[in-house]
Length: 286
Image 1 (cartoon, one colour):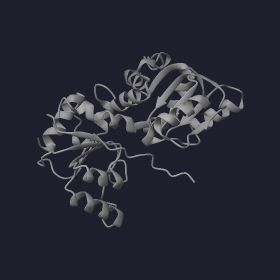
Image 2: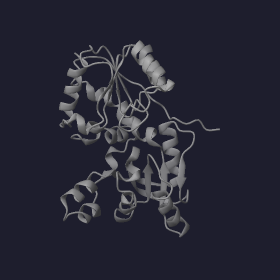
Image 3: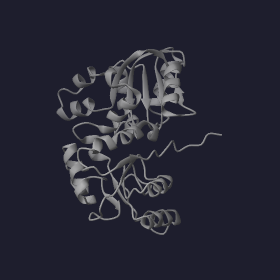
Image 4: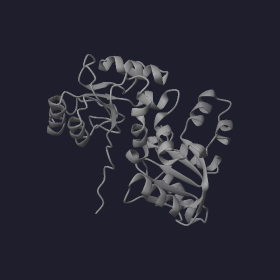
Protein backbone atom coordinates (compact mmCIF):
# COMPACT_ATOMS: atom_id res chain seq x y z
CA UNK A 1 0.00 0.00 0.00
CA UNK A 2 1.29 3.46 -0.83
CA UNK A 3 1.35 6.49 1.41
CA UNK A 4 -1.37 8.13 -0.68
CA UNK A 5 -3.63 5.09 -0.53
CA UNK A 6 -3.30 4.81 3.24
CA UNK A 7 -3.97 8.52 3.77
CA UNK A 8 -7.11 8.19 1.65
CA UNK A 9 -8.33 5.27 3.74
CA UNK A 10 -7.64 7.13 6.98
CA UNK A 11 -9.65 10.13 5.80
CA UNK A 12 -12.47 7.84 4.70
CA UNK A 13 -12.61 6.31 8.17
CA UNK A 14 -12.84 9.72 9.84
CA UNK A 15 -15.85 10.46 7.66
CA UNK A 16 -14.59 13.81 6.36
CA UNK A 17 -12.33 15.00 3.55
CA UNK A 18 -11.16 18.55 4.21
CA UNK A 19 -9.86 20.33 1.08
CA UNK A 20 -6.07 20.54 1.15
CA UNK A 21 -6.09 24.33 1.05
CA UNK A 22 -8.14 24.40 4.27
CA UNK A 23 -6.18 21.95 6.40
CA UNK A 24 -2.74 21.44 7.91
CA UNK A 25 -3.09 17.69 7.27
CA UNK A 26 -0.45 17.48 4.56
CA UNK A 27 2.53 15.34 3.64
CA UNK A 28 5.61 17.00 5.14
CA UNK A 29 8.29 14.70 3.70
CA UNK A 30 8.38 11.78 1.29
CA UNK A 31 5.91 11.26 -1.52
CA UNK A 32 2.50 9.73 -2.02
CA UNK A 33 3.84 6.84 -4.09
CA UNK A 34 6.15 5.48 -1.38
CA UNK A 35 5.32 1.97 -0.19
CA UNK A 36 4.39 1.90 3.49
CA UNK A 37 6.39 -0.76 5.31
CA UNK A 38 5.84 0.20 8.95
CA UNK A 39 3.80 2.99 10.55
CA UNK A 40 4.79 5.11 13.56
CA UNK A 41 2.15 7.16 15.40
CA UNK A 42 3.24 10.11 17.52
CA UNK A 43 2.16 13.44 18.96
CA UNK A 44 5.04 15.16 17.18
CA UNK A 45 7.83 14.07 14.85
CA UNK A 46 10.68 15.40 16.95
CA UNK A 47 14.32 14.58 16.23
CA UNK A 48 14.12 11.94 18.97
CA UNK A 49 11.03 10.37 17.42
CA UNK A 50 12.65 10.33 13.98
CA UNK A 51 15.69 8.58 15.42
CA UNK A 52 13.51 5.97 17.15
CA UNK A 53 11.42 5.50 14.01
CA UNK A 54 14.53 4.75 11.97
CA UNK A 55 15.71 2.32 14.64
CA UNK A 56 12.39 0.45 14.50
CA UNK A 57 12.19 0.36 10.72
CA UNK A 58 9.32 2.85 10.45
CA UNK A 59 9.09 4.57 7.08
CA UNK A 60 5.76 6.38 7.53
CA UNK A 61 5.22 8.64 10.54
CA UNK A 62 1.75 9.93 11.36
CA UNK A 63 2.22 13.02 13.53
CA UNK A 64 -0.52 15.01 15.21
CA UNK A 65 1.41 18.26 15.62
CA UNK A 66 3.84 20.20 13.40
CA UNK A 67 7.14 18.94 12.07
CA UNK A 68 8.43 22.38 11.08
CA UNK A 69 7.90 24.44 14.26
CA UNK A 70 4.77 26.43 13.39
CA UNK A 71 1.08 25.66 13.40
CA UNK A 72 0.64 25.49 9.65
CA UNK A 73 4.03 23.79 8.97
CA UNK A 74 5.16 26.52 6.55
CA UNK A 75 8.84 26.33 5.67
CA UNK A 76 9.40 29.56 3.72
CA UNK A 77 10.80 31.28 6.84
CA UNK A 78 13.17 28.50 7.84
CA UNK A 79 14.78 27.21 4.64
CA UNK A 80 18.29 28.40 5.57
CA UNK A 81 18.06 27.58 9.27
CA UNK A 82 20.52 24.82 10.29
CA UNK A 83 17.99 23.23 12.66
CA UNK A 84 15.51 22.76 9.83
CA UNK A 85 18.17 21.63 7.37
CA UNK A 86 19.65 19.01 9.69
CA UNK A 87 16.25 17.63 10.70
CA UNK A 88 15.18 17.44 7.07
CA UNK A 89 18.46 15.71 6.17
CA UNK A 90 17.94 13.06 8.83
CA UNK A 91 14.38 12.35 7.74
CA UNK A 92 15.46 12.04 4.10
CA UNK A 93 18.47 9.91 5.02
CA UNK A 94 16.14 7.31 6.51
CA UNK A 95 13.59 7.73 3.68
CA UNK A 96 10.72 8.45 6.04
CA UNK A 97 7.45 10.00 4.91
CA UNK A 98 5.82 12.24 7.52
CA UNK A 99 2.10 13.03 7.32
CA UNK A 100 0.21 15.30 9.67
CA UNK A 101 -3.09 13.98 11.06
CA UNK A 102 -4.62 16.83 13.02
CA UNK A 103 -7.79 18.38 11.63
CA UNK A 104 -9.33 15.13 10.41
CA UNK A 105 -8.49 13.54 13.76
CA UNK A 106 -10.32 16.19 15.76
CA UNK A 107 -13.19 16.87 13.37
CA UNK A 108 -14.19 13.37 12.24
CA UNK A 109 -17.04 11.18 13.43
CA UNK A 110 -15.32 11.06 16.81
CA UNK A 111 -12.50 13.18 18.20
CA UNK A 112 -9.85 10.48 18.46
CA UNK A 113 -7.62 12.57 20.73
CA UNK A 114 -10.34 12.68 23.39
CA UNK A 115 -11.09 9.00 22.78
CA UNK A 116 -7.46 8.15 23.50
CA UNK A 117 -7.43 10.37 26.60
CA UNK A 118 -10.45 8.53 27.98
CA UNK A 119 -8.93 5.11 27.31
CA UNK A 120 -5.61 6.04 28.90
CA UNK A 121 -7.09 7.46 32.08
CA UNK A 122 -10.14 5.22 32.34
CA UNK A 123 -12.59 8.09 32.14
CA UNK A 124 -14.84 6.91 29.29
CA UNK A 125 -17.56 5.85 31.76
CA UNK A 126 -17.48 9.25 33.50
CA UNK A 127 -18.23 11.45 30.50
CA UNK A 128 -21.45 13.44 30.78
CA UNK A 129 -23.41 15.43 28.25
CA UNK A 130 -23.17 19.19 28.44
CA UNK A 131 -26.39 20.89 29.50
CA UNK A 132 -26.35 24.64 29.98
CA UNK A 133 -23.94 25.33 27.14
CA UNK A 134 -26.17 23.85 24.48
CA UNK A 135 -29.09 25.95 25.69
CA UNK A 136 -26.81 28.98 25.84
CA UNK A 137 -26.41 28.90 22.06
CA UNK A 138 -29.61 27.19 21.01
CA UNK A 139 -30.87 30.19 18.98
CA UNK A 140 -27.71 30.16 16.87
CA UNK A 141 -26.87 26.76 15.33
CA UNK A 142 -23.20 27.68 14.91
CA UNK A 143 -22.97 28.71 18.58
CA UNK A 144 -24.74 25.54 19.72
CA UNK A 145 -22.40 23.38 17.63
CA UNK A 146 -19.35 25.14 19.06
CA UNK A 147 -20.40 24.54 22.66
CA UNK A 148 -21.48 20.99 22.04
CA UNK A 149 -18.00 20.14 20.76
CA UNK A 150 -16.01 22.32 23.13
CA UNK A 151 -13.89 19.95 25.21
CA UNK A 152 -15.42 17.24 27.37
CA UNK A 153 -17.03 17.15 30.80
CA UNK A 154 -16.68 14.32 33.32
CA UNK A 155 -18.37 13.42 36.60
CA UNK A 156 -15.59 11.56 38.42
CA UNK A 157 -15.53 9.82 41.82
CA UNK A 158 -15.09 12.40 44.62
CA UNK A 159 -11.50 13.48 45.17
CA UNK A 160 -9.51 16.65 45.79
CA UNK A 161 -7.42 18.83 43.51
CA UNK A 162 -4.36 17.38 45.24
CA UNK A 163 -5.64 13.84 44.65
CA UNK A 164 -6.41 14.57 41.00
CA UNK A 165 -2.91 15.97 40.58
CA UNK A 166 -1.39 12.79 42.08
CA UNK A 167 -3.55 10.67 39.75
CA UNK A 168 -2.30 12.42 36.62
CA UNK A 169 1.31 12.49 37.81
CA UNK A 170 1.26 8.71 38.15
CA UNK A 171 -0.77 7.88 35.05
CA UNK A 172 0.95 10.36 32.72
CA UNK A 173 4.44 9.86 34.12
CA UNK A 174 4.91 13.51 35.08
CA UNK A 175 7.32 14.87 37.69
CA UNK A 176 5.63 18.26 38.01
CA UNK A 177 2.07 19.45 37.44
CA UNK A 178 0.99 23.09 37.71
CA UNK A 179 -2.24 23.82 39.55
CA UNK A 180 -4.24 26.90 40.44
CA UNK A 181 -6.57 26.82 43.44
CA UNK A 182 -6.78 25.23 46.87
CA UNK A 183 -5.10 21.78 46.70
CA UNK A 184 -7.59 20.40 49.22
CA UNK A 185 -10.76 21.62 47.48
CA UNK A 186 -13.36 18.92 46.68
CA UNK A 187 -13.56 17.79 43.08
CA UNK A 188 -16.26 15.85 41.24
CA UNK A 189 -17.11 17.66 38.00
CA UNK A 190 -14.16 18.18 35.67
CA UNK A 191 -13.78 19.74 32.25
CA UNK A 192 -10.98 18.50 30.00
CA UNK A 193 -9.62 20.88 27.38
CA UNK A 194 -6.76 19.12 25.65
CA UNK A 195 -4.02 20.86 23.69
CA UNK A 196 -5.01 24.36 22.65
CA UNK A 197 -8.64 23.85 23.66
CA UNK A 198 -7.92 25.47 27.02
CA UNK A 199 -7.07 28.68 25.13
CA UNK A 200 -10.66 28.79 23.89
CA UNK A 201 -10.31 27.78 20.22
CA UNK A 202 -10.52 31.38 19.11
CA UNK A 203 -12.80 32.46 21.97
CA UNK A 204 -10.56 33.11 24.96
CA UNK A 205 -13.55 33.50 27.26
CA UNK A 206 -14.96 30.05 26.39
CA UNK A 207 -13.25 27.99 29.15
CA UNK A 208 -14.56 30.43 31.79
CA UNK A 209 -18.08 30.44 30.37
CA UNK A 210 -17.98 26.64 30.43
CA UNK A 211 -16.73 26.57 34.03
CA UNK A 212 -19.58 28.85 35.14
CA UNK A 213 -22.46 27.38 33.16
CA UNK A 214 -21.51 23.72 33.58
CA UNK A 215 -20.67 24.12 37.28
CA UNK A 216 -17.14 22.82 36.77
CA UNK A 217 -14.93 22.25 39.82
CA UNK A 218 -11.60 21.81 38.00
CA UNK A 219 -10.48 22.44 34.44
CA UNK A 220 -7.81 20.02 33.19
CA UNK A 221 -5.84 21.95 30.60
CA UNK A 222 -3.30 21.59 27.86
CA UNK A 223 -1.97 25.07 27.07
CA UNK A 224 -2.55 28.11 29.26
CA UNK A 225 -2.65 31.88 29.02
CA UNK A 226 -1.97 33.42 32.41
CA UNK A 227 -4.44 36.30 32.10
CA UNK A 228 -7.51 34.27 31.08
CA UNK A 229 -8.59 31.01 32.73
CA UNK A 230 -5.61 30.99 35.12
CA UNK A 231 -6.53 34.45 36.41
CA UNK A 232 -10.24 33.60 36.60
CA UNK A 233 -9.61 30.47 38.68
CA UNK A 234 -7.04 32.23 40.86
CA UNK A 235 -9.41 35.05 41.64
CA UNK A 236 -12.23 32.60 42.38
CA UNK A 237 -10.02 30.62 44.76
CA UNK A 238 -8.77 33.75 46.53
CA UNK A 239 -12.39 34.79 47.12
CA UNK A 240 -13.21 31.46 48.75
CA UNK A 241 -14.84 29.69 45.80
CA UNK A 242 -13.95 26.05 45.13
CA UNK A 243 -12.57 26.39 41.61
CA UNK A 244 -9.34 24.84 40.38
CA UNK A 245 -7.18 24.29 37.35
CA UNK A 246 -4.66 21.58 36.53
CA UNK A 247 -2.17 21.93 33.65
CA UNK A 248 -0.94 18.83 31.83
CA UNK A 249 0.51 20.72 28.88
CA UNK A 250 -0.20 20.22 25.20
CA UNK A 251 1.78 17.02 24.70
CA UNK A 252 0.75 15.17 27.87
CA UNK A 253 -2.92 15.97 27.23
CA UNK A 254 -2.95 14.89 23.55
CA UNK A 255 -0.34 12.13 23.19
CA UNK A 256 -2.85 9.48 24.25
CA UNK A 257 -4.87 9.81 21.08
CA UNK A 258 -1.74 8.79 19.19
CA UNK A 259 -1.02 5.94 21.60
CA UNK A 260 -4.27 4.26 20.62
CA UNK A 261 -4.07 5.16 16.93
CA UNK A 262 -2.28 1.90 15.90
CA UNK A 263 -5.35 -0.06 17.02
CA UNK A 264 -7.64 2.38 15.18
CA UNK A 265 -5.57 1.92 12.00
CA UNK A 266 -5.97 -1.86 11.91
CA UNK A 267 -9.19 -1.71 9.89
CA UNK A 268 -7.58 0.34 7.09
CA UNK A 269 -3.92 -0.67 7.00
CA UNK A 270 -4.14 -4.23 5.59
CA UNK A 271 -1.87 -5.69 8.25
CA UNK A 272 0.96 -3.17 7.91
CA UNK A 273 2.62 -3.09 11.35
CA UNK A 274 2.02 0.06 13.36
CA UNK A 275 3.71 1.26 16.55
CA UNK A 276 3.34 4.12 19.01
CA UNK A 277 6.31 6.48 19.32
CA UNK A 278 5.95 8.55 22.47
CA UNK A 279 7.22 12.09 21.90
CA UNK A 280 7.46 12.52 25.67
CA UNK A 281 6.96 15.56 27.85
CA UNK A 282 9.12 18.32 26.32
CA UNK A 283 10.38 19.88 29.55
CA UNK A 284 13.22 19.16 31.95
CA UNK A 285 12.70 20.35 35.53
CA UNK A 286 15.67 21.54 37.60
